[in-house]
Length: 212
Length: 269
Image (cartoon, rainbow over all chains, first blue to last red; front, side, top):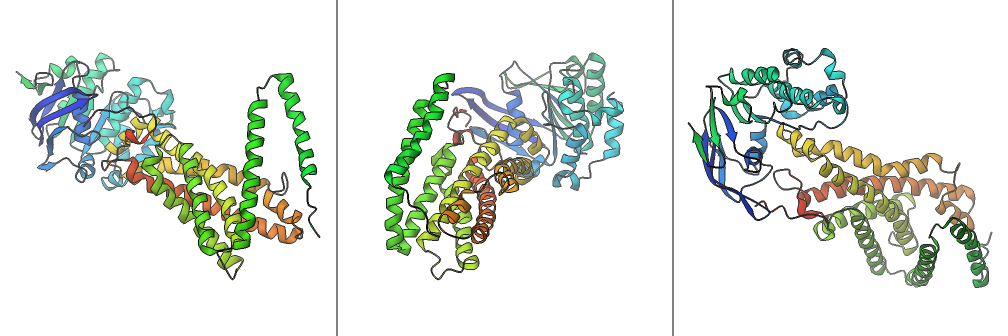
């Protein structure tokens, strides 16, 4: 369970988030809605400890997200954002790099699963040999989605991950996540493929309440 | 063999050589005459003053004074190295000083006590001269090392945070940047070592030969100093980066923007 309790966040002296509270239960599929700059992505960054709130706290599985707990919490989360950066080199280089991370090797990243998922999300067999800088925005998003799934974690933070995909692929990605009951997904998207699903709960970040 | 001393008149004749760059600058409008004369004048004054200072330092040869002077040299090297990067000196001065001191003074004392086996390992002639050579190289290495390390993480922040989000430890996320920075910092030293004696005769070796020593002795000293340089450079670069991590990153592993000279206050509490 993830709880955001009375979160306040300021940026350049301006209040971005003001006393925001909501809870996400295990297995929930939550879409965060709000206009640009309303703090949707900041909520994901808060959960990952990339920024800290001016006020309030985030509770992850009963533990407050702080400088000690955040390192273990990150190991339970798979995060993908719209402009994910994998640096230089080939896709295979990046996959090899992350498989050497202790957190990933301990969880035994399933390389066979990566191959299956790359095919499922319609990336060619040769995609791993491609240079990252040569990937299109959509290819990069799907590679990051595949890596996130292959990590074998149950909590997903997905920030506009289908923004560069065509409608067919948007639906394929959304359906894949929405079909897994045990997965908890916190999604930022304006795509109908997510918002129109009956499995999804929508939280309005600007108004600080659930949309019915 | 005695070294031929230079009279002040002879030394003055050296400056006649500057006619060549001055003419080139005039012909091609390099706009280098001002900077050239400033650099030559400053260098000459600095060296004359240091020469006078070293003369008395060597005569006096007091351990405490020698160590104090070496400490001042380390402080100046640290400030020059940090000023060459984009980090605020006030934030990293202490860890950088500790790194430089450990790496360079450690190497010098090892050389003086184990290699040369001096009776007085704080002898000014060795402590100050070796200190100057090692610190000069450490300074150059650290300017490249620190700048590359922090600049790269800053420009690569999306990837860095993505790797952290995957569950990487702080060490794992930083390691690629540390490797790249140390390799770049060492590149000039390794390149000069590879061509030493063939392309150029190094300064120390030339000095020792001009000072009356045989080429055999000069070469032994040169090998010794090059090994010490490479060791102190790599050690100081690695130590400086590692010891500044605590002040340049928060406990969440995120790079603090307020450590940079050009930082804008994020306002995020």
